[in-house]
Image (cartoon, rainbow, N blue to C red; front, top):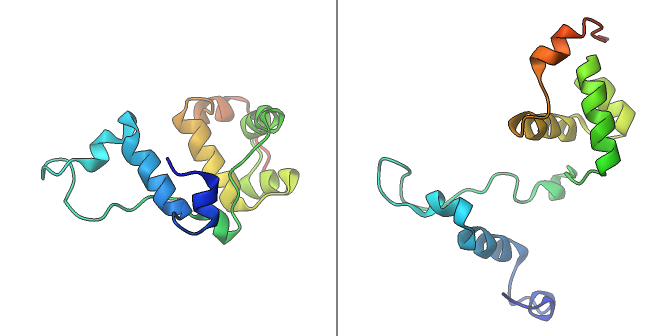
Length: 119
């Protein structure tokens, strides 16, 4: 792993660092497979690898996440959540996907509340 001095000297870019990190992780092993049943050979595209350069920031405070889950289940819309947390709608949408994939958000629970907040 390169030092921060190598990065500052321009010897390694952040994308190269990310790529070396991902290639070294066991959970991403499937991305390197070359058999045709899993994935075509060639360059790999990494989703969201440079998202911050587009003004979308994915870092959240844990206390904001707790409030976010609560407000989501109360039925707040994406635009209202974005206004509440002073975030872009893209950041809210990505967080919804992240929380749903990890099992923290439930559309069924959101609908059962019955107090959906719409515009």
